[in-house]
Amino acid sequence: MSAPTIALQAAAFSALAELGDKTQWMALSLALRWRKPWVVLGGVFLGTVAGNLLLVAFGGWVSGHLGSPGRWLGLAFLGFAAWMLRPEPSTPPAKQPLGRDTGLLLWTAGAIFLADLGDKTQALTLALALRHPAEGLWVALGGTLGSTGADALAVFAGAKLTARLGRLPLKVASAAVFAGYGVFLLAGGGS
Image (cartoon, rainbow, N blue to C red; front, side, top):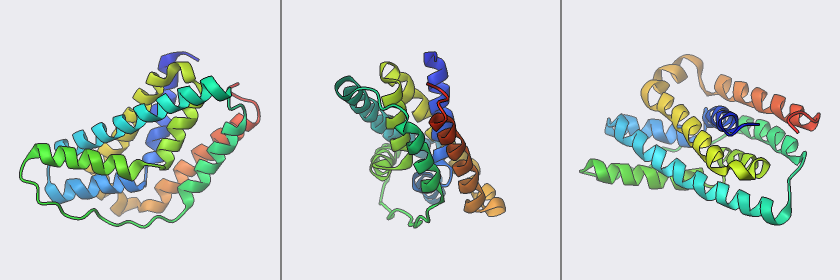
């Protein structure tokens, strides 16, 4: 698989994993609260890229020291599908007294970085980094663009979309895609 194809795969799966996720809801809440969507989106991008770079470095180290993960990735994707359907509490972040865009940008980046720790998008990025250790930067790039793109959807159009569809249809559609890919991997596809 070529490096750009790996990046596209990472982007697509990260975007799907981010739909209805707590970090997407956080991005929406921050944008609605401070009405500075571009600053919030910049913070989302910085927080996501920092987390993804750490993950692909770790994934490269694991692959180099422990070998290829094999077909257990199929089980991981089925786990992502189940994770998509679990109930998540939706609590907005505490309001911070920020007067400058730089403070809002950095606060958003830190909040997104912390909120994403151990999240399904990070588990997905790690799984892809383990599967393609030589293409870690492409995985990080794709994962960052996919997650940030999904968060941009929330920031700019999320309120209208969720008012019409609700969270459940978005989560179910994402879970179906992950389950399908998990079954594909377990059946020996993509090896």
